[in-house]
Image (cartoon, rainbow, N blue to C red; front, side, top):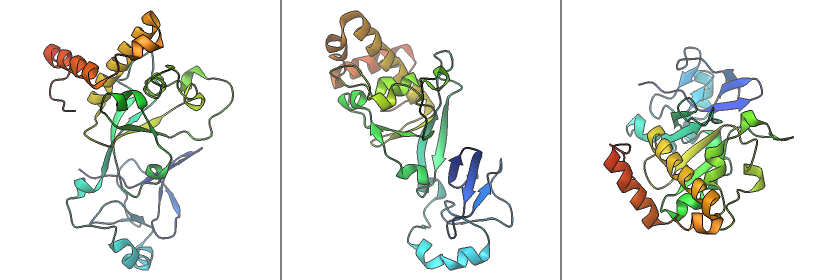
Amino acid sequence: MAQLPPLIENDTGLFLFCAACGAQHEAPSEPPVPPLLLCSRCRGALFCGESCQRAVSHAHAHLCSDAAAADAFVPAVRLGPLAGGGLSAANTAVSLSPHDPRLQRPRAVSPLLAACGLRLAVVRLQLGVGGPPAPELDNQWVTLALADPVSGLAPPEWESNVGEVLLLREDGPLSPAHVELLWRWLSLLAEACAREGPSAGLGRCTRAGFAAFLAGAYADGSARGLSF
């Protein structure tokens, strides 16, 4: 299945960028057509044309591999603000080129999921969002995932106006189904905090606690086919 190369986001939309000169091109709905050229080996670098491709051919060679194209892409999940508390419309699998500039942005690792033995990082996509809290930019999944295991509070910059993010699993598989299941786990922790206070509620956030949760999810079929 053809992939789109790296995308840059700005205030006016999504753009493809040339790996040689940096020129931006409006992103099409399908992989690029002439005169734009996509590297046929790694499928992760786009060029304005043959002259740009030739100009950086030697520099690009060490980033480019004859390995299977699918293996060259970084799996991630794009998670938007939650609509009505549901994830279905906001939770999408994406494949990123290792050259994608979004992978160079700062990452925030979930301390709650780390306590469960999962290393999951969050990359903010909507940069420069500020001002008063806007409910349409709330991303409760992220705010819960980045909560401090002691206080139960997320860092101020992740409490509101989070917007869309990329979720990256650094130690295992990640798919929209994984994100759905982890949302259930985070919601259970939040409910426990509301009933018992942060200290007692988050005391459940351990490898053993998560293993017990997974055992129940496998038993009821909601984790069928997933590996952690």
